[in-house]
Image 1 (tube, one colour):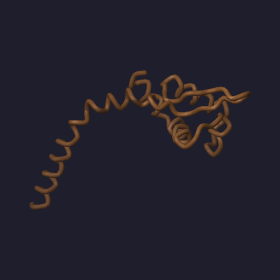
Image 2 (cartoon, helix red, strand yellow; image 1 turned 180 degrees about the vertical axis):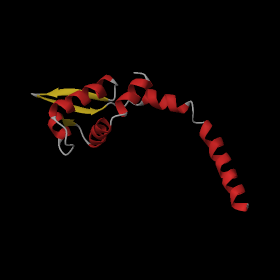
Image 3 (spheres, one colour; image 1 turned 60 degrees about the vertical axis):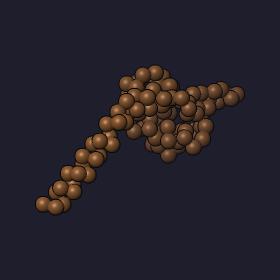
Length: 105
């Protein structure tokens, strides 16, 4: 997957909530829905987006489908963010210098 697909999947707060729940345990759709206040069809749609983005995986256990986080799902996003990693220390140093100058004025 590319980072745009992952950003799109993570843009929705319900999908982020589903990922947070899956971070703790492998769950089925009913378990995922509990406490979120969204319908079963909405959970299914969100799960489909997360699967398409490569963020979660599923496995069938009897009649149930269980979902879990794909450990490699965020790799494209992390690779994309790494390109900008060197940008931040310099910006933070500049901010610290500016704040120190403002303090002395």
